[in-house]
Amino acid sequence: MTEAVRFHFSVDGDDFSSAGQASVQVKKSLRQLGISPETIRRVSVAMYEGEINMVIHAGGGYADVLVFEDHIEIQLVDQGPGIADIELAMQEGFSTAPDNIRSLGFGAGMGLPNMKRYTDSMEIESKLGEGTKITMRVNL
Amino acid sequence: MKIAQIKELLNAEVICGEDLEREVYSACGSDMMSDVLAYVKDQAVLLTGLVNPQVVRTAEMMDMLCIVFVRSKTPTQEMIELASCSGMVLMKTDKRMYEACGKLYAHGLCGNGEVR
Image (tube, rainbow over all chains, first blue to last red; front, side):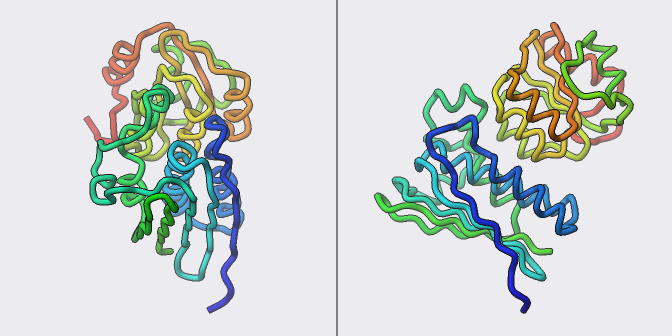
């Protein structure tokens, strides 16, 4: 397989208003690569929700997007508190986000379910006190 | 429905964006951005009472063409700049969410692209 195109981003955990900048950048880059608009939307929404989660819960982290010949992989890595119960976190409507985040339009318990909804596969590896790694794949 | 017609129906003021002749096919009224990210279809308009940069980013992620701020909420300069970068139209109306959505729905603009 030809080598993947990789985009790497550092997600700033201190500034909620700038969250999503990496996703906007990914959207532009994928457009330049000639990826279809529907696929771009799926990738960028999944990554955007992930970015927001990293800012709300984990104090930021790193996001990598790898474009292969037949799929796009999104890796989100943080060193936050970890997810105690992944099954529970995956339920629509379950949220541990603080009230101030809800007043900003997030924290409705839709982030992880949306990430799963828009991708073909999603794996969550998480350890309490160490962090979380989420790997998502969107087929081309 | 053309963006120009939305402006007329809601007696809205255009804050930025010039192309009011573009067609939108569905609408979403919400202050919860994750709900917007979950359900909205292509070429939509967002009606919201929420004002922060994530509103514009959410709309951008969903390829939305227009955001209408209800209850005379006014977007910040940062939001206007973000919207201008992606060619999005921002408008504000003094109508409340229920009334604004109702007017658009009654004139044929559906929720999730369904045909009435």
